[in-house]
Length: 216
Ligand code: AMP
Image (cartoon, rainbow, N blue to C red; front, side, top):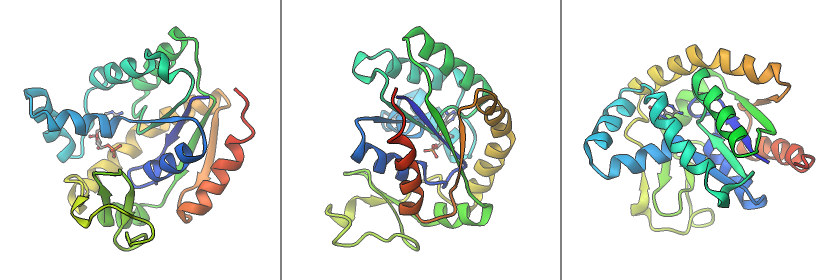
């Protein structure tokens, strides 16, 4: 099965992807992570992406669609992708459908993680990520400790776009672009709403129960 985790920044898409891949034979595709890897190359393209991300804006559809195309066309990923942070525009949703069709696949389910604005802000401001094991923590809500994190502290970093100024822009962008995407998947009968304000484990229990009953 292929699935989409949809929701505003800070909805917990990355945390839920981590949980899902620990229990199911699926692979996470985060366009945010792919773009951050591009930034590390410090090419002209990487520098352009960095400035767009740090302003809380969206990178061009063409660029992300190309990155996703490379992943979908890889036979190793056949029918086992979790799309995290993609699609983010209706044009990306159309492109995803076309690409999947070309490679004889489809989306089985779209989880819409609904989260209130004040919670988004708290989660994003407190978020820290281990650049070694890619686990996601939160200094207020889910701090790393010797039980839940084995890497050295020096690997824990804050994302440069996780600050109060950028988060407002990212949230507004989400609000403007999300409606047509949600309508699109709702019409196809693929949309499932989840209360993303709950604790990570509670959300995961719901997602797990649903995924266990999907056969394709
Ligand atoms: P994320 O890691 O999903 O929070 O994404 C971080 C940033 O990367 C976003 O604020 C956008 O600037 C950019 N980005 C990630 N995914 C997409 C996408 N599907 N389309 C356009 N820009 C994206």
